[in-house]
Each structure stands twice: as C-alpha cells, then as structure tokens.
Image (cartoon, rainbow over all chains, first blue to last red; front, side, top):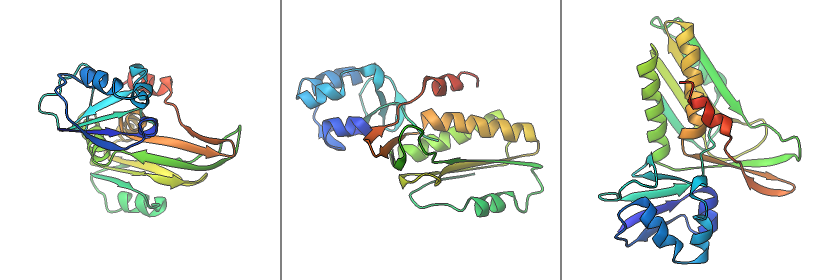
Length: 82
Length: 147
C-alpha cells in the first residue's frame, strides 16, 4: 500500500486530499496510468502531466521515477510560494 | 537558522529586531517581506494558501542549507504563512545575516526565488467573480536559472 496525496486543484478535481492505493506500478507514470483508468475525475486531474509536479517521500522528482520502497506519493500543480 | 511555517500572523518589526540584535559576527542584515497585493481587475477578498505539511519544512530547510553553501551566512530566518490572508497581510519574510552585504542581499534573493517555485505552497484568490488558483509564472522558473 502506498499513500497518495493531492494538493490544490488536483485535490479539488479528484475530490479527496489523500488515499491509500494498492498498486504494483513500477514508476510514477505507471501509477498515473492506473489512476487515470479508474474514473473520469482521475482522468481529468491527470489530463496534462506537463501541468503537474510529483514528490516521492516529500522530495520533488519526475514521472519516470521508480516507486520501489516509496511510502508517500504527492501530486500537485507547480508551486506558488513566496 | 530558523524555518517557521505558521497560520498565525508574525510581527515583522519584532522578528527583524530580534534577528539583528546582539550580533558581532555579521555586519550586514537583509530582510524581505511579502505582502498580499490587491488585484487590479477585481478586488481581492482573500487569499487562501495551502501547503504540504512535512514537505514544506523539508523544502525550506533544503533551500536554506543550499544558500549557506553558496554565501558566507551567519544566520537565516524564513517565516511563511498558510491559511486565509487578506490584502495588506504579510505572507512571509526572510532575513539573512552575513559579514558582508553582498552575501546578505544575494542570499535573500536566492531564498525568495526558490521559495516561489520550489516550496510546496499554492495560492488561491477569492474575488467577487469567484475563486481561482494562482498559476505559476514562467519567469519564476526562469529566475532559478541565474543561480
């Protein structure tokens, strides 16, 4: 099981801030494919990966990153701090 | 070195005073504070700042540690708020202390550039016309390339 977190408009489109996902996905991109195929709201949130960022165990990474050993995946739009 | 992520307001004057007081190791202190700006098109009712607890503190500490490897810094303070803010409210501040002003100025700019697009905060604006997530700007991403 892996914790999947959503922030900002990704959270709003999917409708929940966090869920546990049973997956055997090898990479972030594989996990995204699995989520997309679930329901329209996931397909809508993950429509354009260029508009999204991903963090594995709270470190920014990219969609090709492997998921082995990862406990927490977070998807969100580009950050707007400061 | 202090990183604080908080919902409550902070006292900019008191923070700056405490940061700059009692130093003999640093001849230069630079502070920057960001304030919620009203919008031109439609008056801003409030700004909601969401963040990623845990990662936010990690990211800010990482940015701060990176700054310390690049400049001669004796102290750094980063405060960033989340939650609901209104026009005129202070969102965040950074302070840098260095023996030399160039290091203090450059480090403060570096911290601001990375805070904008590498710390997990997201701003949503509420106006009379509705709510909208603030889009990231390409120039913010470009700003990182100069470092």
